[in-house]
Length: 240
Image (cartoon, rainbow, N blue to C red; front, side):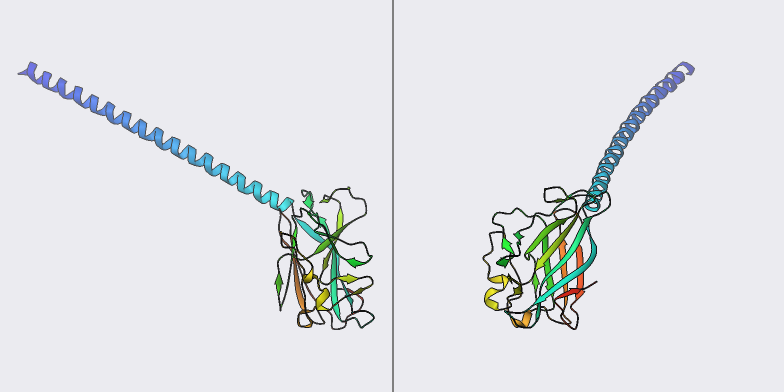
C-alpha cells in the first residue's frame, strides 16, 4: 500500500512538474513576443516622432519673414490721375539660422518698355497669391531683386535680403495702364498657369480696399501680408 501510494504520489508530482514547465515556457514565449512587440512599437513611434520633429524643424528653418514696410505704387492711364495701385513691394529676409529659400521669380523687370517681363521656362517654386473682396488669384506675377551683399544665385540665405514686387497691372514706361486690354490677365500664361489680376474698373485696387498677399515657398511656413489702401492715393504709399 505504502509502496503503491508513493508510486502514485511520485507519478502525480512528475505530471505536475511537466505541466508547470510547459506553463512556464508558454509564459516566457508570450512575454518575449509581448516585449518584442512593445520594443518594435516604441522604436517605430520614436522614428515617427523623430521624422515629425525633423519635418517641423525643416519647416521652421525654411521660413521667410518681412523686413520693413509694405510700399504700394499707384498710377493712371497715360497722363491721367493716380487712380489705382499697380504694384506692391516688400522686403523679406531668412529666419534666424534658417535654410535657404528658392526665390526664382517667374517675371523680371527692367524699368524700360512694359514691365514685368515673363521669363519663359522659369522653374519657380515660390508662389504668391492675391485676395480681395472681389477675387482670389492663386498665382500672380512677381519679380525679385536682391539687396546689399548677396550671392549670385536665387537662393535667399541667412543674412540676405530681397525685395519682392507683386505686379497688379502692367507698367507701361512711367505709368500703369489700367485699361482692360493691357491688364496682366491678358498676357499669355505658360503651362504652369502664371497669370495676373484686375481686369476691369470694378476690380481695381482703389482707396479703402483691403487686400491680402500670401507668399508660399516650396518649404516653410506661408508669409501673409494684409493691408488696406489709404483713403487718398499718392504715387508712393507706405502701408506700414
